[in-house]
Structure formats: structure tokens, C-alpha cells
Length: 584
Image (tube, rainbow, N blue to C red; front, side, top):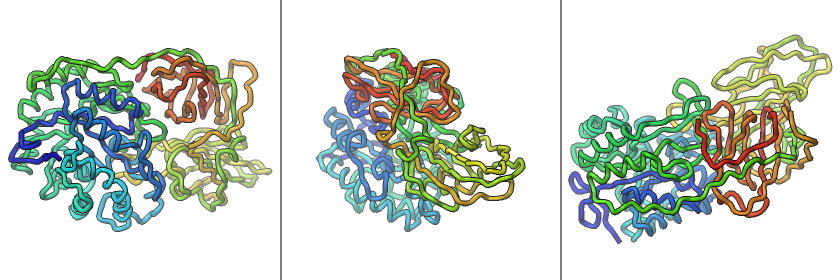
């Protein structure tokens, strides 16, 4: 058993003052085989605490179906941190932001059009309660009063940036306390009046999140919380990347200066992030400030450890500042994890999406092109097909509220792309015999922050030719959760392989020993990569990310299967495995 509490302006652990020097590592963004490596590096930097979010959507991807094994094994991650002598801060759901798909909320919440998110809505809170009934008993034995390493839990997340429903925040607090979460509870918000007004709750420690100007931020916190320890719960020492934008970086000197000022004020700190990791699969989120902005699969974050876990100049700059304020042992890092450039992989087999629809999906008939959530789908792609009778002179094809990127085909011929951030219409002529219209829509990540959080995917309103809505659709949900039923054929020869239709390409690579590597897709346009049945993530020549990180545990000694799902075509069906990341 251990005690962790607040006394006046200090944190107290076992009756002695303690300053929390924490770093964020998300267990769900790092393969379990590397958890120990990342945690040891956090400790070597001079930190005494690790913080992690808990995303609801990976633990309950379908209503009532819970997953807490493998990369989802929160309990093992927490126990490992404790065994290494670290305190643990847990920031559980319901909402986490985190640049993560839907801010960690499960997409099936959107099946109910009347349900209201992140407020005192009884339908929503019923789902939260049922999830907490599964999650919180797993955390209870790991709390410090019960001999575990968890010293604090967060109530909601940056709620003042979203709303001001104190009845809701009180409900979440009471839901935790009622399930035995007898550790320090806290909130975290930006250091602005409306954020603190909306996000703070009586009897709960408030912390603030910022990347610079610590003195000003803590001064604002003191206006609302006269005493209690000062803590920056998210010190933004780097930033994340959006597709179609530049790679984000921040100089180590700026980070060091802000940290020094913070520690000089006697504050505690949590680096967001210490190690960012990867948004594997379809789990990246998106922002919507002025327009929709999807986040890349790399969550490198330009922080203390890079995406593949190597210390960066920022790591050493931070440790140098920490040595000014606390006594640290000599630096001892784990052995570096091997990286290898395996070279070219020729994708010798292929399978057309349109020829393989029955292997990937069961068709659903609907009058309207329903969004994914109405069909029980959360991620991936969805195909809407219809036969349009003719003749019909030129008419403008309109996708009313497409989310997020649609490829349009007429009788199998690619006619154009309609994107959420650049909506347009396409001219269509329907001959006397009619045409088959296929619309393949990609979910590029649900919004994870701000007022547009409710973000159904697919075609959310309807499809029109001029002002006439089209009815009578055949819909193919394509989550791409398994590709095992695909039938591939051998590609004859190499060279020009540009295809007007989406195609799966498959190749094999035999290796003697797995090591970390990076896949480059020069000459490819946009799509997804799967390795040995694991969905690595998306690629897109729009950048900035030019490589995808492959941890060694995704590979095996012997033959490895690579599948690339390309939407637009490639000049050469070859990928290359290199030992260097290129984030743009």
C-alpha cells in the first residue's frame, strides 16, 4: 500500500514531498515487445512517472465486445511500469482527444442519431457506465492504495475546450469514486478563462496544458485555484502532422527554456509526448478548425524519442535541464534496437477490388447511401453502387456531405475524386442503355477535437444528379479487417501498372532475422499497407510522411507477406524497405 495526496502546494508520496516528472507513452501506439525499452528510456532521461490515455474504442470496438489483450493490455503496461520503479498516471475514457480516431470514443455511439456526446445525456451515460464496469475494476488492483503504481486518474479530458456541463463532469467523477477509484483525481485544461471555467470541478485538482509561457499559464491557473501543486499535465514539446501539410518540428532549445522556467517555479510536468509512437491501422484522428485535416499514421510528434524509439536531441536537452533541478544518476540507455534495409519487394500478384467484392463484403440493399455507422461499420472504406437509367444529358453528380474522400467510377471507368475539404461536382452523361455508378468512400479518421466531434463516415445525406436524388443502392462495407479471402493472380511482367481501379498487390520477402525497418512507396499514390495480416497504416503521396514504420515484431524469420491496397495506380509494383525514416 502507498499514499499519494495533495498537501497545500505539494504532492506527497508516502508522506514525503515529490515532484512529478512524467512523460506520456501510449501503450496502444507501441508494440508490447517494446514497452520495456521505451519505459527504461523514460526513466534514463530522469523522469519518475509515465502517463497514458485509455481509448474506449480499442477496448470496446463493438458494443459489449471487450478487448484487453496484446497491444490493448493496459494492465500489463501499468504493472511493467511499476516493476521498473515508475509511478503511473492514467487518463481513462470516455474521451481522450490524443489525435486518435474519434477522440477514443467508439464509432457505434453514432448509430443513435439522438445520442448526445460528452454531456449529461442518459443514453450516452448508460454506455459509459457499462464500459466503466469493465474498465475500472481492471484498474482498481493497480491503484497505489492497493499496492499498485497508479497514483492519479483524470476526469474526462480538456472538457472546458468543448463544454461546460458540470453535472456531466460530476457524474464521471462519481462513476469513478463509486467503483473504488480512491486515488487523486484531476482535470486538465488550457490556461484560458473559458476553458478553466468549463473544465474544473469542485474538490478535484485542476492542472493546465500548454507548450510555452509557463509563468503566464500558472498565473491563470492560480486565478481559479488559489492553492494546490502546480502541474502542466501536457507540456507540448512537439506537435503532430496532418496529411497535405508540412512536417512539424520544434527546436530543442525552446523546449529546454520552457522546461527550465517551469521547474524553476517548483512545478511538476508531464511531457506530451515523451514517445509518440504510431497510429497503426485506421486509428488516426483528424482536426476541423477551418476545414477537415486528417492526421498521419506517424505520431512521431518531434519529441524526446522518435517514432522508432531512438533518443533525439530533445531527449538530451531535457535531461540537461533536469540535472539542474534534480540529482540524476549517470545516463544508462538500453541497447539500441536493430534496424535493417531489406531492399526491394516486388509485388508479383494482384487482385482487383471490384472483382473481389464478394470475398470482402456482404452487399446490403438500402434506399439511400447510408453512412458506415448505420451499417455497423467503424473504419475503412465503403462502396455505394447503383444502376442509373438513361438516356440523360450531362448532369452534375453531387455527393451531399461525403466523408471523407470519394472515388467515382462510371461503368468501371474512374471519373474523378470528390474530397470533403475540396467539395465539387462531376459532370455525368448517361447513355440510353444506362450506366453503373460506383462510389468508393474512404474514412480518413474521425474528428478528435472541437465542436465537430460528431463525424459519421461515408455519404451522410445523399447522391444527386443535378437536383434529383438517386435511390436504390447496393452497399458494400469494406473495413478491410481481413484480406484472407482475396484471390490473387500472377502479374505478367513488370513495368507500367497504372490501373484506373483500386487493386490489391501482393509480394513476398524472405528474411533471416526480423529487425525494425521502414517501407517506402515511391511511385505509388494512395492506399494502405498490410504485413503478415497486420494493417500497418495509410500512405499518400500528398505527404508529408514518406515512410511507414515497421516494428520487428510485425515480421518473422522466413517468408513475409506484403499487401498494398492502391487506390489510383502505381508506375511500378515495387516497395522498398529502408533503415531510415522520412517524415517529410
